[in-house]
Length: 85
Image (cartoon, rainbow, N blue to C red):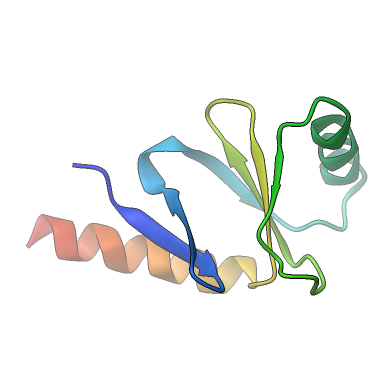
């Protein structure tokens, strides 16, 4: 069953479609963000704040979040713990 994870400011993503959660500081992540902007496959969920995590989705969409990757990973694990019970 699909679970929706809050990525900040009331924005949610389908956890079954997440491929990776990255830090935005690396050169490959920056290139991925730039490419996603050019192809209009980017979703900016930062509400104007600094990007702290890049969420790569299965369908080549890139979601930008103002939350730390550790926070998002914790939420991801909590959802799957709850689903197992």
